[in-house]
Amino acid sequence: MTTGKFLLTVLGAIAGLAVAAQSPSQRIFFVSSDPAQPISYNKMREIDGKCKVLVKDWFQPNQKYAVKTHGFQTYLALQQSAFISDASGHPDTLRSPMGGSVASVAYDKKTNRLFYFPMFASELRYMDLSQPEPHFTYLDNQSLNLLKNKTDVANQISRMTIGADGFGYALTNDGEHLIRFTTEGQPTIIDLGVISDKPGNGIFVRSSCTSWGGDMVADAEGRLVLITQSNYVFRINIASRVAEYLGQIGGLPGGFTTNGAAVDENGELILSCGSSRTQNMTQHLFRVKDLSSLTAEPVEDKNIPGIGNISDMASSNLLNQRNNTPPPVISFQQEKKKEFAPEPVYTIFPNPVSRGKFTVRAQNIADKGVYSLLLVDMNGRIVLEGKMNLGEKTTNHSFNIPSYEAKGTYALLVVDYFKRTVFSTQLIVE
Image (tube, rainbow, N blue to C red; front, side, top):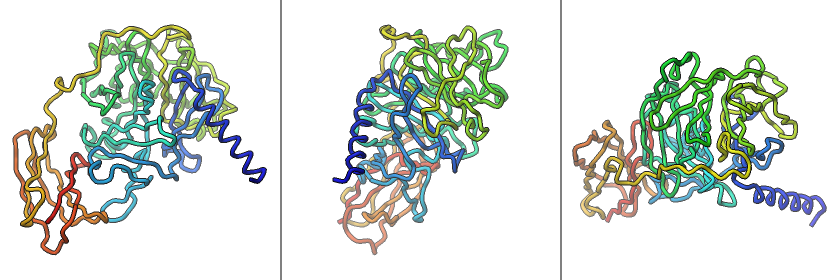
């Protein structure tokens, strides 16, 4: 072994030990952009709980990672591809692990998962950090159907955190949808509804001029704290979904917009900006020690290479929870399956197919609309494409397999308006 290779091996081992030594409460994650593409936020990085040093780069867009999609799991459980091609063979950025760009992320220390929503998809995904290399899971069988199109900024999810009750919480820009999800096993998602203002609020929580964008953290009293892009702060009671306006953060440089927020190991608020590098700011991270004063001070970040242009941050810490303080006891419990609306059910018959014709029966489809059915061979070629108009009532849709297709195993996919797979199975043709 050459000296150079030996040093690389030693450095790699040391880096691995540093990652292993990080306790969940000492981990802070953030999503940043590459200097060459300042508004494409798709690099996942980790720093220590004091915001002093870079621990690890978890995701680089030019590398390949294992991807599992719940709507595709019976066909290809894991595929080593950072960029998945669409039906025409072109790279489908939305189907890449980070979906092109991410502005909302939350870290759950119980499961060691990083949850996030791609900016242009109402689809919850998570990165499993328990693997030697990160594995990605797309929960594409639980479509929220919030986005009307890619320019629907109001319904983009840009604020996200894990609450003191153990649930994950995410909020759309317009405050019309507070999303809650479980974090263990296969997560389940529910829309809690609209955030409203506490009487007397001087700034309104759903105003596009002041209160869109930004990020959320959770405090030790079981509430959510929203810091908007314009640096206004609200405290949200989860049970009532009422937001109390606390004020605007001072001490930040001109042009600084809060795009990421996390809580450090001392229970203090850390802020970052999505354009600090682009604006040539000398400081990229700021700390707010006390919400009663809302005064920010710079954090020394010179030892973090490539810092700047951060779209979102996450940690497992709670605001105002100090070192060696036990976590609060919260009465909420993870949702039980029976508390949710009936799940969609798709039945395919006959299977195997012997006479070239099969039927799809759809039941409990809450998101009414036109869905596509795709039949894909083992080479990824679409051999049949059809349309189904689905609703809450049980409907049957029959399809004929082209006579020239060979016998064998095919993947059958049901895809929604946004080209997200909501169901898949294998179809055997005899």
